[in-house]
Length: 468
Ligand code: DUC
Ligand code: ZN
Ligand code: ZN
Ligand code: ZN
Image 1: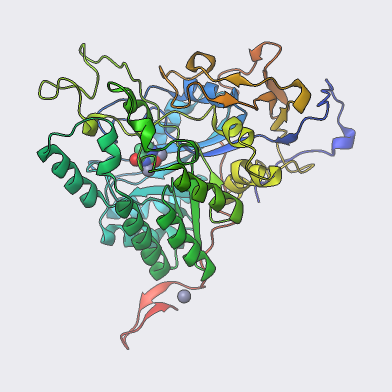
Image 2 (image 1 turned 135 degrees about the vertical axis):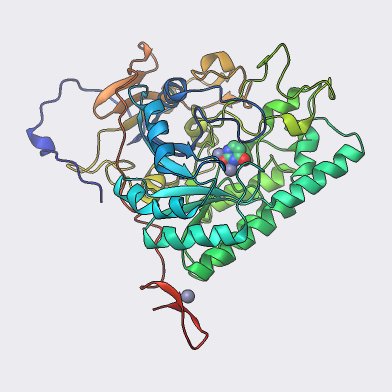
């Protein structure tokens, strides 16, 4: 439990009273999956948002705490330098509270030995990749990470896609001269995700080291996760709005416009796939709903050209479209406004569970007197909320599009408070928060993700292996 020295609410003097007028009052959103100011790792583009613009966008959509990535490149040996450098980017620049997941690109002996220090610094989660040349770990490296993470009570997030299947499909498409954005979807077939998800579950079970599978998009992967959970294996899962609202048809737009919906995994075939993901949110397969905010500009115009355009591919090539879309500001409103989740479930998925999973609860993700920060969202009562069509110009990120352009929004936070301060008042000034008010939060171990066995993993003389 993260403790805060707080008095009794009854002793406190309110400086202002806000009448919620019957609107929902909830803990502020916690977004457990955010990419800001990262070097190009998922293709060629560079991050459109820095810590200032990304956290500004977050607060204007009701998110008061985020966990973003501190990315270690394959060429780097240490994690601690990565952590410090990322901290410097965030420090004094954030509108909301924050922490980091270490993105482990090179689990060298040195890096593994640093897990202990990470843990002491309040970094209790990391992410690994099973795809992308710049990041991909092999199965042995994954076992190394899982074993050490288990020892240090660190939760491992896994990007589960089989990179070799993706590369093979990409070559097949190139042989046929198929370069349009929609072929990004073809190049990432469901089997790449299904196979990697199953493999990640098996490796996690073998090491008894809990994992969270990030951005799950396919019904088949969700079924593997559910089956593992039903056997008591500590497997957690995340999905994102793009897998609830976008499909393959969004990648197939005139010109190169489909690039605006390119993410990995890609939006899947049909609404039937989205329905299965919605069901997984309701039935507990998914623990958290995050944005996977990974911002790139459509018209990035580097050296007079868009990123995905080269001399060889003057119209563009799907493999050069950076993989990721912006969504930190729209996550809560899209999910609540869809009216497909029980309201308590919505709070659990978008605030309480990410806080528990990443060791922030009950400081974040709750409204517990004496224990929680006063991070609060107040929504409109139904009669005061006017539906509107989403336009990118309404958003506060530094991206020149939203994949959700034109959608009917039925909800938006009316007020957002961060540690007792009104930082968003939609009808009176909008953004009221200030850059630098957001602070780093030292996290505890996950209160959800725990190994099943005690003791340390080992191999014994009789040839058996397991937990001592
Ligand atoms: N994975 C992410 O988590 N975000 C963007 C790109 C990716 O592959
Ligand atoms: Zn990923
Ligand atoms: Zn066991
Ligand atoms: Zn991501």
